Length: 425
Image (cartoon, rainbow, N blue to C red; front, side, top):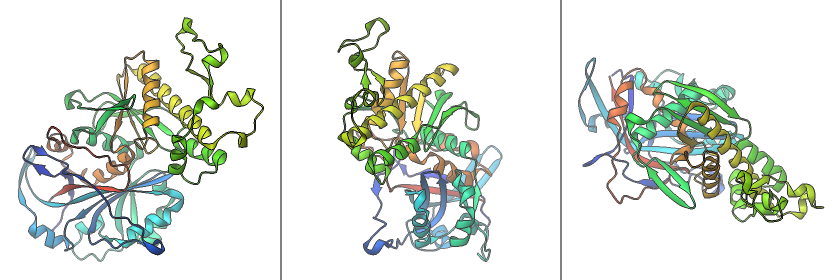
């Protein structure tokens, strides 16, 4: 049977569409560096191949049977749409979120090859004899590594525009998941429910290797208005040179035990411990990141790596927050949403960005963050499968309602959620 429309659904509950629970995926590495063989069949997959990280979103059915077997056991029904009626079936399973370092791309390829890998192309051909399997992919690596995926896995990367994917992923999450967006300041996380009718416009700040700032005016209406080369790649690159850390996570963990005031020059250091009250600068305000290194007769090895990592993280987060607010001010936007794997729900990073936005806006604007912050591009590419139809249906079908008191877990590691995929013909 020919199927050409794919739609992501969250599992139903009595209260509406519900993400049932967050489940840690089984550890993919075991003794000898081999992947565990998962019985779930990968039926749809999308990649976001960035300069530093590869983000993977894929759907796997609960059963190990073929697509036809799952179709038989799936619930079927009629769905009224503006242009008439359409038949559909629903495949229930899990939506998985994975990440790999781009420099270790062979790990990603090995992982995909370890799965019962069924590409989207298979849904269009019952004979499955085609040697050209298609996978949606976004990011610069979709171009750079296209030949490698073709050679190693026999798949063709169907390239989806990076900005399109980021916006589609963000819009989907903000509409579909009730407790997706939140604010964070002073160690306090507050979830924000955004009225879908009042979602636009907003500024989407995606912090990857670099930073893109996108003014979003609608589902497919957006403009990249600014950006900066000082982003996650800067933190990782300088951190590697200055601290000898081997990974982003190691560097982030190192920063936990640091004190940036050992290296950063504060207003109080210049004014003898006093505020510069005339222009509203507290004594604890950073006047110059890494500024004390200039006035002190010390070498790099005289500073603790923890303090260096902390100062570096503070410098980059502060600047991103400031540049983001200035762009929001430029377009009269009050809502600023931050995404990208640089954040990783790291408390100090979020707090620094929030303080920067609050400071420069005089408390008029707030920074908001997303639970699935690192997977916007991959999720947007995944949703591109359904763009042949039902595009307008997503906004009012995919509304998650969580009962009061529900515990909402975070999904920025290798995790999965229960969901369904609706396939219409």
